[in-house]
Amino acid sequence: MTTLIKLGGSLAQSDNLRDCLETIGRRYQGKAVVIVPGGGAFADQVRLAQHHWQFDDRTAHAMALLAMQQMALLFNGLKPGFVVAGSVAQIREHLAQAKTVVWSPAITELDQAGIAASWDITSDSLAAWLAGVLSATELVLVKSAGIDTNLSLPQLAEQAIVDKAFCTSVTDAAFSIKIINAQHFNDRT
Image (cartoon, rainbow, N blue to C red; front, side):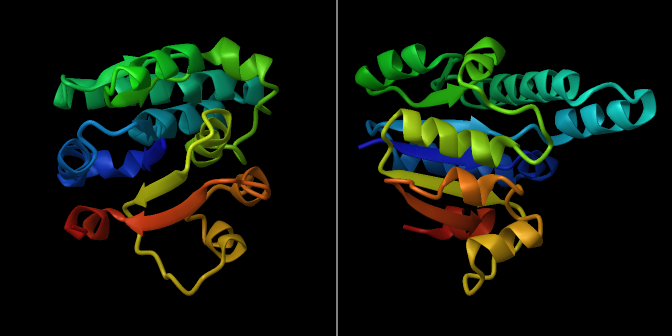
């Protein structure tokens, strides 16, 4: 019973990131949990560079994955007891040892999986892909934005709460999906 928790990159702009990591450490200690980092300010820099230099989406995609890797290192720096893993095999190995894992996505593994190089696919859809590969039971997306629980997934995509490809990514998902604001995530008991 694996839970994936995607922490939005914008959480790094406040104390919410540290609070979320602490909440995960308390709430999921000894349980199979994988944290998926958003790209945050690092990915924002990729968007700015692509706009300025006009390089292709494949290059931007690889750079955005590096942004996620940087966030994974940041998470690990804040919570040294969590382990960083780049591949699905490494994640499974650490989960078998009951360690909390922070995913630092391997570019080659995602290329081999056929993940498209597009800004429509962000860490939200990558988290859904990983949840499927790991046969997770739950995917939790923790966002800095307010979440209207009455909205459908397509409506959340229209409001850019989740990426454009997320709805397609979870069409046949065998795991439950929760999209929650960071403050509510930290307040849950």
